[in-house]
Image 1 (cartoon, rainbow, N blue to C red):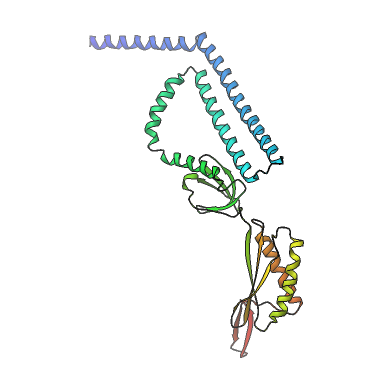
Image 2 (image 1 turned 90 degrees about the vertical axis):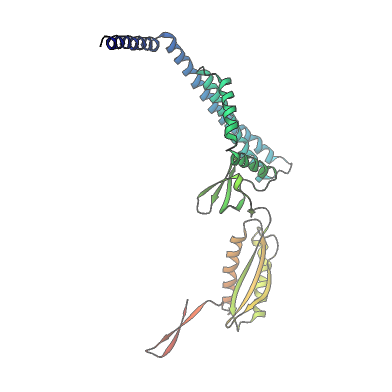
Length: 305
């Protein structure tokens, strides 16, 4: 009992001394001076970093804007890609430096921390092969100009406009407004619609009894005038003639070539105007039909599908 009592007294006195030392440290002038100075340094570092990123991005943007306006022929899509990449790299470097500055302001030994991080990084590196693959692949995508910001591409199950190519990921905006974020390392096959001129074909069905020669003359005359109305056409569309014949219809085909990604707009215009032109001249285009039999009246009724 006496031994237990002495142990309890010693423990209580030790706890009291620790509590007193903690209180003295928390209320010391040195601690609060350190907190005040460190807070000022941290606020200054974060403010300077934010301003450096904002101003740096503006300067990079101005430089590339001047390059695009210069008489030297620069690829706009490539310039936009490199612009986004440089802005991302600037952000990474400035914020990493800011973190190092904050740690120094808190009297944390950066040298020891970096040494420990190097040893840990060696161990983590074996499990970070995908990250390295993403970065290397992203570099070659930009270096080889496989696609750039503003291009319309199809890759890894995603289709849309490239918004940004980073060191690790590529961001694509889909047709419905959705955003795809794809790791660069997973990009293998790319279909780029923005590099070459776009070609398209239009098939129209005419009645089997239609005057094909008359239709060809009208359509050809119409197609010859299109390049003057639509500058996005690279040449005059061509009427190829009859491509197929079925029981009650004849399929005729038109082909054309436009600037990249302009084929859908021109194709819609040609379909509508050719249909109206043919119908105005007594040539009716065919459409799918189905026959209904009225069992009561004993007659067939024709209708659209």
